[in-house]
Image (cartoon, rainbow, N blue to C red; front, side):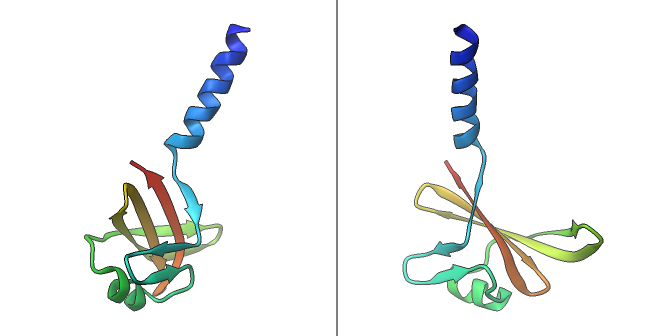
Amino acid sequence: MKYIILLVTSLLLTEYAFARETNSIRSSYELVVVGDSESDLLRKMGRSSPRYFTHREGRRSCAATEYFYDIDMQTYTVWVCNGKVFRIDVNNK
């Protein structure tokens, strides 16, 4: 019984500790969705300090940029590859 409670507790903590993927991010007035251009992201959300890296998916790779935005007690991570937003993650603070 002790192990079952421990397992359930660890699964619940794991669910809330890690980021989840979403399709959009909204600031006070603007909406950015997966597929928007990098210039649209910067115009709508403002410039944050980017992190550059090489994104590899299977046999393809590209020079990607990662942006962080803190909005309403959540941290959004936006990945841009080839000038397009391809992934948005949200993590609760």
